[in-house]
Image (cartoon, rainbow, N blue to C red; front, side, top):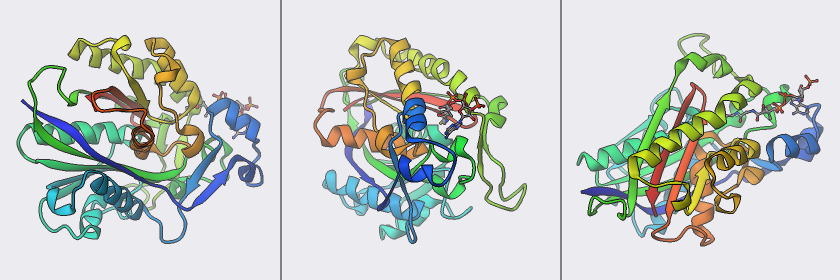
Length: 323
Ligand SMILES: CC(C)(COP(=O)(O)OP(=O)(O)OC[C@H]1O[C@@H](n2cnc3c(N)ncnc32)[C@H](O)[C@@H]1OP(=O)(O)O)[C@@H](O)C(=O)NCCC(=O)NCCS
């Protein structure tokens, strides 16, 4: 059985750091409120010349280097983003060109904060279906460009960045002892659209629009949806919370992360947290956190790693993989 195994990982962050203290001079907020309600201490904000594609390209190059690979070794690029450089062509195609890659194929997936989980699930299906051998899976965002910087209820929460992994098809035994993606569980329910959306778009207003969110409503649904889809991942593999070496959650809010881990019975020492440093970088948050924990030696070969996310749509999902 073919398994999609992580071969490399990499990240890229904008140069500029925006601290909570700086936000205090922009909107009526405080470092204390932001830290207490979200766990966020700072975020990175893209400057001139920094875009979703440029950050995604840098993360992709780092992931290729880490895996000892070049663009010639890749046959598919999937970019998870809700903040593309252009409405079209896809940011994935833009990054393909930036990498000097003119073979294979590339496309974007749009599942907001669940985008990276959706992209990994998609890459895994292409690999196991024999349609691709090595896939660059990138989560890249510049949410700073769709924020309403006068709305304190949203602008303090998000940041920019990119993370990437290379998934490679390798022969496995078909058991859950294999390295690679062991299960991917995806869900969506469009009935929740109004709770987290962008109030513009090419086919409605002809503008890009701004992010709008009923934060309390999102919070109310988040823990239940996340734990539900993780239980599905456990059911599909026979694992339980006790078997997990690392939980790498979408980094939206420390309270949602802690609440989900507690409900599942996963000790907080096994949870990778970067939301304090990055804020919510939407589709980029999981690969940024994953790379941080892999780079500093916390995640080791053979570890059972659980990824989960929930976001606009609503969309939600989980991936269980062996590193
Ligand atoms: C947004 C969020 C942090 C707000 O925390 P909360 O505890 O629910 O706070 P509330 O929305 O109830 O607001 C409490 C008060 O703080 C105020 N407030 C909101 N933003 C503030 C800010 N940045 N600074 C200071 N005060 C703020 C509100 O106006 C409200 O004041 P009021 O009681 O006088 O009306 C929280 O709801 C959340 O994290 N939701 C999930 C959001 C999310 O993760 N979305 C992305 C999913 S991918």
